[in-house]
Image (tube, rainbow, N blue to C red; front, top):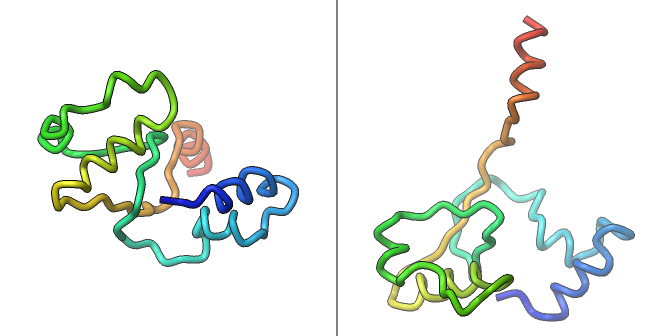
Amino acid sequence: MPTLSSGAGHALLGTVWPTNPWTQRYRQENEAISERPVGWLSGSCLLLRRAAFDTVDGFDSRYFMYMEDVDLGDRLGAPGGTTSTFRPPRSRTPRDMQRDVTRN
């Protein structure tokens, strides 16, 4: 889990000082693309096996907003499981693909 101070450092300084140590650690832009274990998950783009989701009874309905993704990751990792992340190559939008078609 990120600490409160590292989250605050990134949130408060990320836009005015993009090279601050908290934002660099959060973004990990200079690290090689790899799969690695993580302490928490972000629901902004979350892919997981349905069987794993069902094993922990999915999202906890007591969370209306915020932290339900962190809770889910915590429960997935609790019974000896692991949560990991990977950084895929740059994603492409339909607009990107349209530009490629018109260039050829």
